[in-house]
Amino acid sequence: MLENDIKLFFEATGIPVCCFKQKEIVTKYDHNQQDFNLPLFLLTCIQQEMPKVWYSFTPEYMYFGGIYNKETGQTLFLGPVLITECSLKQAETICLRLGRSGKDSFIIKQCFDNTRPHSVNELLAGLHLLCRLLQWDFPDNVPCLLFQWDTPYPIRAVQLPLSVSDTVFSDTEDKIMSCIQAGNVMELNRILNEQIMFSSDYMPLSLNDQRVCILGANMLASRSAIQAGLDYQFAWELCCQYISSILKARTSDELSYIFLRLFQDYTQKVANLNSLTGSPIVRKIYQYIQLHFDSPITLRILADYLHMNCSYLSSLFKKETGITLSTYIQQEKIREARRLLKGSKFTITQISEALAFSSQSYFCAVFKKITGMTPESYRHSVE
Image 1: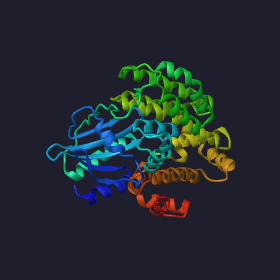
Image 2: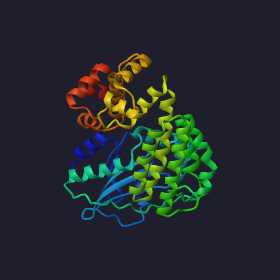
Image 3: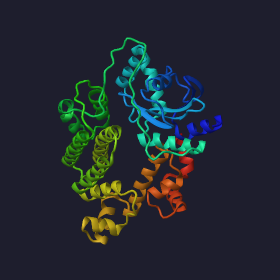
Image 4: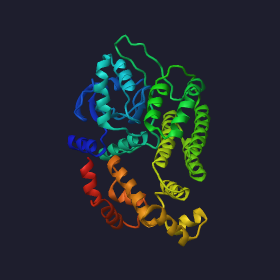
């Protein structure tokens, strides 16, 4: 692969890329931040023979992957990335693994802050894209290789689980549910990072036991969100979406990601709800829109959902909020579009389709009417 291709890949995805020849870095594209040779350490600690395409993760939830050319001995290394914002505690743990002092944790944290969080699916999509650029076939199943820290430093290695044991979860369950009920996203992330992801008090679970445990956590989180005022039907639909994801997951890391994500999702939904003013009808409309961004939403659909007359619902909503229902629907969809433009690499067309606009031109017209900018201009302004 040409160096320009690697550079373009990094600029498009934001995921760091290194090209290794055996154990030496040939090319590297990242955010020009000191990382203490972290990619080399991670590559060295892979415990299995590398297939053509692979990925792995550390006990600290650093995810990375690679494409290996056995004939040339070259490896294209993607990552590492985190699935959540990097906490200072997390950065300190990584520094210890590398034999660095605690004062270097701010450098590691800055490194991951510049990269921003990426999901496992985004990492796998990056591997898929690189295979296309290389004109290599992408396997139906990308193997997850075993990782074990193996550094020359006298560090006490603490094995960390992908799942959370009953002991650990019972100690933090009340705190997590309190965060959901209060809509406190910041405190929730602190608890997840410091009390779950880095706890050494655990009992390893089988894949099926992890699935059962996370299904239970999903139900508890849904109930807490309902107690905080989230509409029952909205919470139930969200709960069902996570049940489907949990049952479809085939690896421990997928389940771990879902476990973290569902708590964050419920908490954010409650936080959004707490920021609203107005009657229960307005809140139900808001929650319906949040759950159905990918579908057309009309006055008739909302009236049927609320078992109300269209004319009455329209006049009631305008009286409560001062704007028409159609304008409100557009504003919420454009709010989501701005989030996607800022935090993803989806194209304008993909975002337009994801938000169920009838055409890209109509999406761009509505976006400009509400924000005063075109989607392209907005994306450039926040990059």
